[in-house]
Length: 467
Image (cartoon, rainbow, N blue to C red):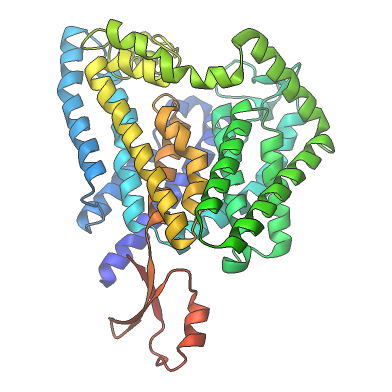
């Protein structure tokens, strides 16, 4: 038991390392070691392998049907990529890279589900919001700096993307705007949870929480990203749905008022100190709508247009991973979208209709599963953390470009794992002489345990969370 708990803590530590590399690897790639950017891109993979090894040695890989199905599909893909290599003459490194972005990170989510406890998720949230405080200064400097300044430079020779005019789309410590978009959106989800459960868990002192609120909103308001605001909208909707499924009328009312207040604070900041950012974002929306059409139609289109490829794509596809930037660079020497821009169309074209649909359906089933589990957690435990996180990542698990952009791939499977871990009905065990003597729902803290059961011997001080 002691050794398994030690292994669990090791897994937690390495998952945190994976997360921090996810956030800061871009800084290494574009500022510290741009000449090694392609090598640094894979810096997280050895950490994931180490997590898998520890999990395998200590039985932290669950016998979950969804993981078993994913494993079967991933194994079936191996002969496909072998045939593609022989018949289509596709670079085998491209095919290996394609298999990696499809399947390599999936077990990580289930290991997180098996190893993370509520206190680990709380630590994850608190550290993220604290790190966002100094990074907001970096975001502001990027926002006011020229496109060709060092702080807005990347590892390539191209200029930074702009919102409108010469105002840049901030990237923070990431190598591309998508990473900052996800970081800013994830902060909104974490912020909502901390405020909603502030009295119950007291994760941050009020002064620190107020600072974190302002700086986290700075990340969003200066992102210049339509996707970031779209994801924030999904987080808000998902939070309201979660609140409506709880049993507590008081929580429904207070939570709804609190979310509305947070929206109003963001709106006041947008029309006040960040009014220039609002003008530029409005310009971007207008320009995008003129050139690309309605944002809503653009978001919904990938759910439909992939169907035309189901009937026309070759049975063997054009090569797993060939349509991604990384895969195309390995084959052609240049990173480009050579097949399709949207996720589902590219998967069908890369893998063929049969294999492609199997992977797409799997993602759909997994999305439905964690959504239903999140609703169940809200109804059963008054716990809307899974629904809040689902609002952040659910759409991208279903249809987002997680196999195309490395940062999105990492964020997706990390947060899928956190959602599944958060849905589990944990209990707190007070242990004496390596024997559990009493159990409580995870909503109770160790402080409340000591108040209610002050006759517990002083030796009973080890508190573990078990499922």
